[in-house]
Length: 321
Image (tube, rainbow, N blue to C red; front, side, top):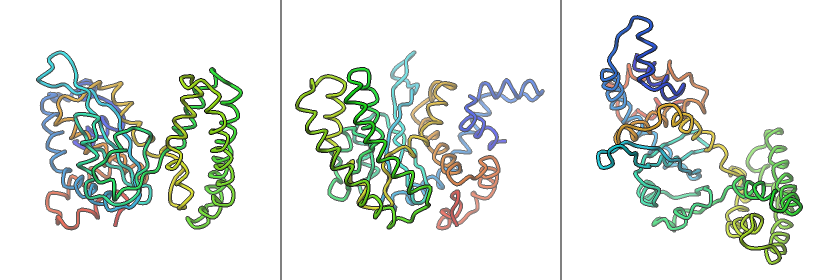
């Protein structure tokens, strides 16, 4: 029953009060307070698995990161919501996702989580990632899709220049599609990018630098050029390793259920509930990546985890052995 409630809310986006109404139509009277109690108990059982997932993600040497807002009810703002954030970390190699709830969008969240991390971190252009305390151990990559989006927005302002830029982005993504369709290994992907992507990137950089001095800096096309050139060293870093991705689109796919959930259950009831949601979102998003059926998975895990050895919890993660 707890598995059904969790999947209905966090996969099918049905708030608990709607689930109560659905159950009532089937002559099953369960108070919403009871369901909330079951939710809390389920999250308590899954918390150690969440911590195991966190440890496994932080052991990866290449992560993607992004953040998404979440309205939260708090005692200090009666009648209003606090704007909290789920910071999301994705390991493309292990297909693992971690949601980490924080009260703000400040760099304190990633600073704390990534304080002992060593590796590559791919993000958008948000400035919080530029000033991490552990910066000496973290190499940043940027997201080509975010840069391309700036030029898509600039089409109304300057369709000619924006169109030329988008054509060069298209060439880069055609090369990536070629690598996927041929199911190339990492070393072959790197070789393909060095041979085909690098000349396009060199052409793009030269063209961007020519155009930025002749367009109005506050125009949409000027903003797109400045954004892209500012991040250029990070944007082109993906060609150095075939395991790297050209953009952050994979993590955006993992965040999408939160956006859908916001439209249905509107807010989290407290900061504690928001972090509990992070636990469930992390586990269910990882299930989805490994094509694991979430209801059957949660039913099994909730049944065995109370007596499971703590040092073996990682074996219970979706897709793991």
